[in-house]
Length: 109
Length: 118
Image 1 (tube, rainbow over the protein chains, first blue to last red):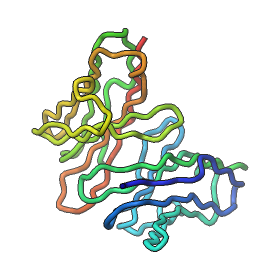
Image 2: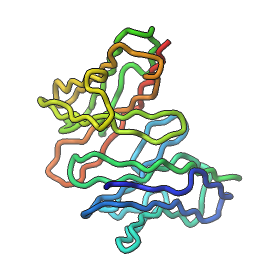
Image 3: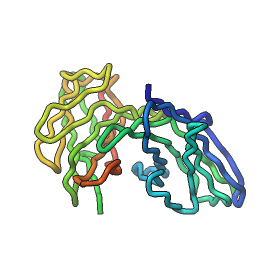
């Protein structure tokens, strides 16, 4: 079964501190993993995806197939990073995304 | 580029009436469009996958006759909530995947439509 687990509903850090949002997945095959972000009153937007191996807004995520994880990390959190973060997986082109329940990140000044 | 719009942004209707929500890809053609439902402070729940020119594929537990999906063109999909009831009140979000030769195309999301059924 396809499943994405984000164990933390809420995560609060101080500005300048490192942040890690956890994501574990279950999928029989080779999935593509994504992180989506939803800022307050804005639409869901792609933050980064495993296949492109980019670093967006200082965030990175490494796919660990052994641990079936795709944790999102940033070394120095900024207040503007406060948002809802959703981890998601997809099996192949145009296949549906399976979302985790999301983690609300709050970066305090 | 890759903008998806939804109309209306919010709608209030009486119980028993039908409501149509449009999803448009503004600057690209979409092979596939997806419809999600999001309850307050919860994740997105996929309702159905819509491919242009064919019947939508509904997720388990989603009533086909209740949530009618029409994907008339490569830039437009509509979701009609028929005989709406208060429990249908929710935030409905669509997304679209561009036509491309690449694998694992990104989904671009619309801003959502807030439906309130009185």
